[in-house]
Image 1: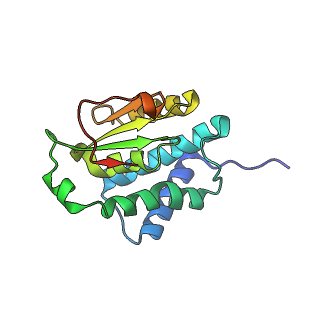
Image 2 (image 1 turned 90 degrees about the vertical axis):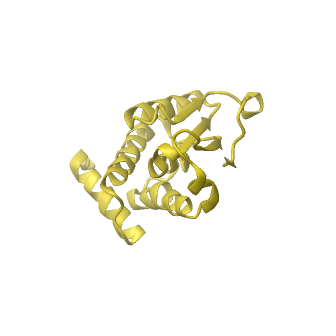
Length: 161
């Protein structure tokens, strides 16, 4: 028996509706679209590279989108309120894997965040570089393909995940 595959438009619609329903509100359009695009790209790459063990679409929405959005909303207010495009809140995500929670945080935080993704597994780092370019996050998200013990920075990070 052949499995029916969902069209790209139907998949995007299902992700967006699931996101709205699970959050209980609708995000600003640009953030919502970027989050949907992120999960669609993750699902596409996951077929070949096994980036996440979660296969169910609505469970992916919950774990890969809703949970990071909700945790972002509970970041300490002082560092966010004091952040600016010239002095962004610096975050390091260690073992970034599929980019969760860091990519959704980058989408939600806009130019107020600078996020460094540290991933030593090549296929995962390749996915991260691709999604960062695709979502045009290049100016505020850096991908380092290395072991975190070898990463050096001249600027401190306020949050390490």
